[in-house]
Amino acid sequence: MTADTQADKLIRMANQIATFFEVQPGDRAEAVAAHINDNWSAPMRAELLDALAAPELKALVREAAPLILRARR
Image (cartoon, rainbow, N blue to C red; front, side):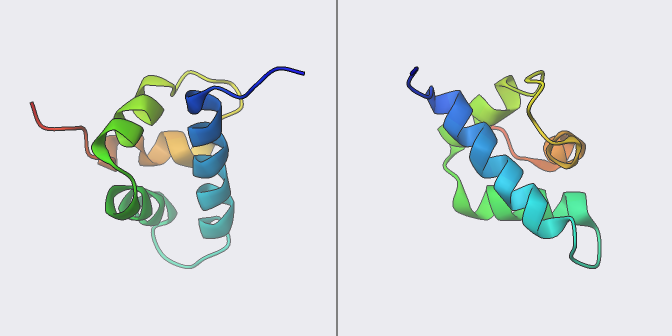
């Protein structure tokens, strides 16, 4: 059994958020991004955005990606 990486955990969490918002009214991508922006630290958001090519990432998370804030430099 292999240990999950931090990226694996973030992908799983983002997918859970997307699953919740998939059945909610309104702009689902905006809701996913808002939840992540409000509740995740800048390093967590950056690591998720670096993992957008992961095949297990839900399409709704990818759709929300342009709305997810990157850390300010």
